[in-house]
Image 1 (cartoon, rainbow, N blue to C red):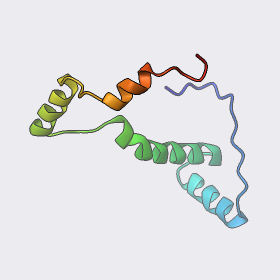
Image 2: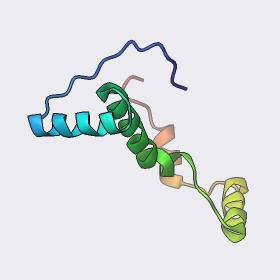
Image 3: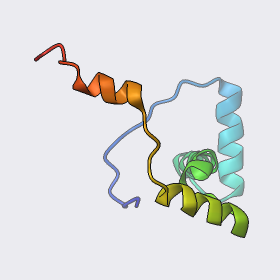
Image 4: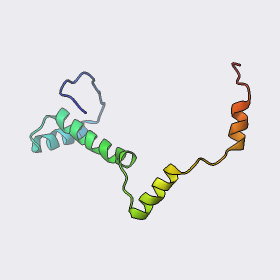
Length: 90
């Protein structure tokens, strides 16, 4: 959750043309450049992160997903052997 108390800062170096474009867009939205950039960046971040936070499955996929979660783990003899070996700090 984002609070109203802002304590961190991000500085950007941009070309004058980019700054003018941001200022023009912010003006059209009746926002400051900072508000416009922050809202735009957070919107883009949400889109990028969405597939890592939420996913949807149809009924068959959901059943397969639940079955995989409930299934007994398959034996991994090499991992079991590795875990029995002494570690470098032992």
